[in-house]
Image (cartoon, rainbow, N blue to C red):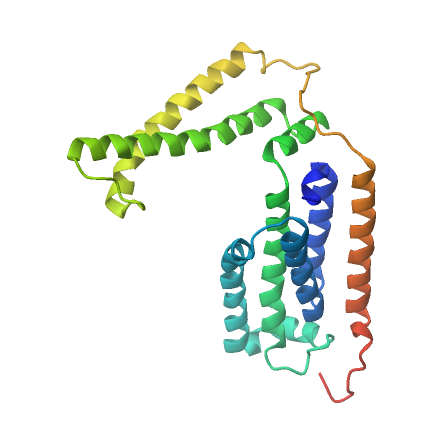
Length: 256
């Protein structure tokens, strides 16, 4: 649980830096190295199951597959991407631009996924509110939403059990489309009631007024955060330098 011990704000800055690099650096090796590095960190250091990492990668892989097929089918319209990919190690491959776009989508998704899996939402909101990066009213609205999600799941389970007792049949493990549609209205009413109570509670506690506030369980900076930022910055700089120099592999003059 190495990343989970870190302060949310330095981790957020590092994640944004890696995400920006994955967008700006159009290099296949860079994208693959970034993706494999994040997968290695999640599996080895964060003890995330392999099946969970692969399952969470599926939406990003499908998104990237759209870029790959588009690049292969419409190569004439991808001139800018093809010109950029001609400067990378894999420029000789006819689908180099599509592969780079594919792994770019995967790398960007993995950066976001790593941050989400290793960051407590409540700690992040408290840190942003303490640094005046998020208004208190908005922060407490997020707290209410974080508490509402598990309560909605519990309410849905209670409604399903009540209907199963009424019909005399055990509830299905996975609800079907008809059952999901029948749950929409009562769950929406439950959410509206909870939102109204939360709004009244926030007004009663003076969240509309300004001034200093006391925040409990506020995350603290430590030496681990400085080491993490330094090592992450050094790794990112090495990856970018490798991409700019073509990873030290000479490119044939006839390519491009």
